[in-house]
Image (cartoon, rainbow, N blue to C red; front, side):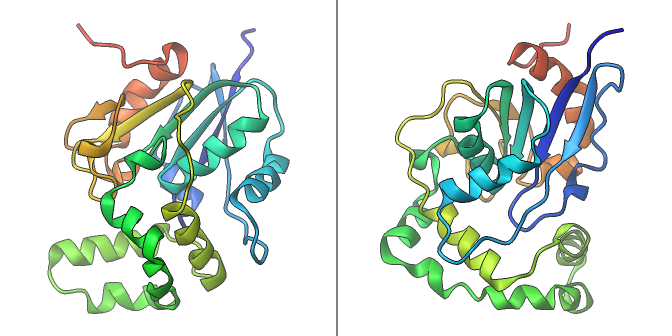
Length: 226
């Protein structure tokens, strides 16, 4: 019997593991594990937080996959693990891939004025959203946002915009949408580009991942279909 590969998934900022609910890897080859956010300690560093997340890794030679800010976390976790594969989705590999607005927010401290306490009112967004697009987006937020804790959100935003990484880990496999509105593709280098993929493509383009992710895990690249 073939030994199965353990694949760990880390969701994006404040998101629940349910963002991966439609991702299906062949059960005979892979066993999936969904990581969840924990509330950071006061003034906890990104490195210390990432080390703390290691307690949830129960296997060796795993595949570690992270989305958005979760992609940053798994890259930090990878410094202390021997991995079979490290994959980030809708994320960045280093500081230079952050959009200018985030770099500006980090330099000026403007990230501190983001009203993160409004996350407690996520249930109201769907009720008062105007227009089909906003209603659909509000419904997605309500369905997939799991953490509205202000301390967590303040910490996460600070860590995201202030992430210090001068040289990307060469082992990172980067999957990115060409319509990503959070991390524009023009700032991204050396990625597998998903046509019409947005920042939430792991949710609304799950069929692409179901079709292509096994090959990416096995080979580290997108296998062209003939």
